[in-house]
Length: 116
View 1 (cartoon, rainbow, N blue to C red):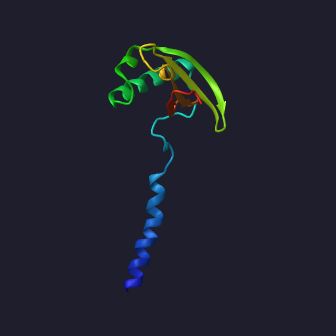
View 2: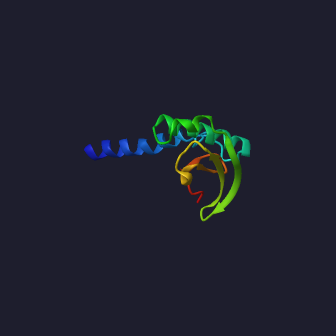
View 3: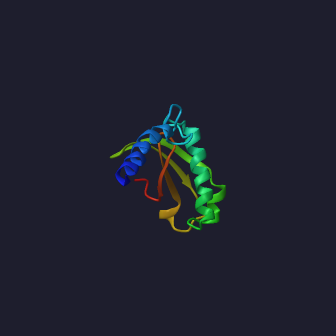
């Protein structure tokens, strides 16, 4: 009897699971895989700068800096948006240009001061 109950429970799980992934199911919950424009990439990078400031990772002086250059570059993992910001208020010359990296579909990848 116990084996019959266990068999019924496991069998019912096979029929319940497909109900969760029906038509219209979207894996990314509204995030598109379509490429974004250079303007959208710049906006996303500017928004990310605000988050980096709030997290204390970069100085407040970055808040008013606008995107200096937006371009697509190809790296070992494929093409990416590279958005650069120049901040002359930073004392260390090697850290005056901040580079933000995004996938072509607009997903944040990384930020650094080297551009690579």
